Image (cartoon, rainbow, N blue to C red; front, top):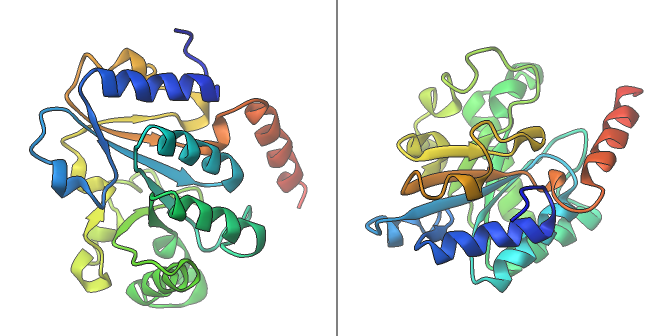
Length: 227
């Protein structure tokens, strides 16, 4: 099995995990399988290029897997409108959970808004345009984050109950965390780790998967660097 960022290998990873006895779930449904001996919480941060996340969603659907896709409300690359909204609706209609990829903590001072109010505004927008209840959130950290960004996260400032959230990623710190950030696995590919741990939180960024992904991201970054 060749470890790369092809859609073929993504399917191989998921099939190997299932064959190894893992239950693969999203945050929304975690409580239903929390007592199982081997569990993977599978999540996707849609930072850019939602169309590539849709390809992952289709693969997961074919394997009867449901994951969580975290969606940004404001960003330089996409908004939940137009063609992007159609893509997000398709992901939701495949049975996956839509979560909020919040930027409230960074943008509240910029907008001169209360932190909780801005978060609730983001959440309300997603719920309205996608016609679904948002109960899971994670933070997007590209916008001028300090060194301790993840340790000083949103839910250390605002109780999750205050903003109608049941799940957020830092709650699952006891799970072994793997991320494909910038096509780099810090601890090796998922398929190399399945025999080492029984509980994972795995973060997959769709923009890095599939034919031509790296070239497309390089071109996109160069384009936005000129703006």
